[in-house]
Image 1 (cartoon, one colour):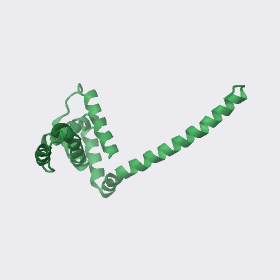
Image 2 (cartoon, rainbow, N blue to C red; image 1 turned 180 degrees about the vertical axis):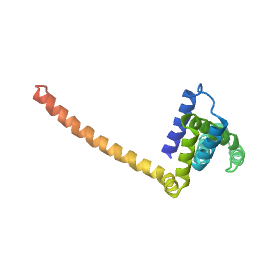
Image 3 (spheres, rainbow, N blue to C red; image 1 turned 45 degrees about the vertical axis):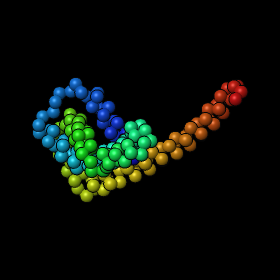
Image 4 (cartoon, helix red, strand yellow; image 1 turned 90 degrees about the vertical axis):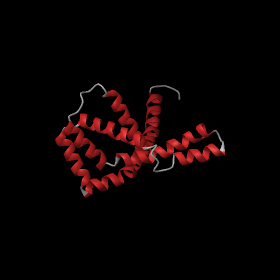
Amino acid sequence: MSKRLLTIAGTLLLLVCGASAQAPSPEAMSAARKLVVTLKVADHYRVLLPQLLLKLRPVIAQDRPEMERDYDAVTAPGSDIYAPFVASMVEQIAVVYAQSFSVDELRQIDAFYAHPAGKKFLEKSDALAQASAQISQDVSQKAADELKQRLIEALRQKGHKL
């Protein structure tokens, strides 16, 4: 889940940085929107919204049971409360993609993710990212431990007391 959050945060950062860029063509936007649908960006965002609303619940309802019930009813999954945010996010991400790739590139990327290998990659991307992060963390820790010992030994050989 953290990968998705980072992806959305990164995308929003790109939006802020690229806000002054030229508006993409209608053809580029069409291809980018299609890619965003293929990538199921909205589905990933919809998963995050309930978590956001759950964090807001105690702040808004203030531990008052009658407010909590109404809050839960208003924010129930499938509620229209999500729609404008999902639509806005999808459109803004489409703009980022349209500004980052040519129409032909967008179509090629979409074609890849529409094929079985691309679909499988999307299905496994979260697990792959988590496994890769764990490997990176483990190797980095081992490297830090070994480098620390090597550096201490090198400094001792130069006469430093550690």
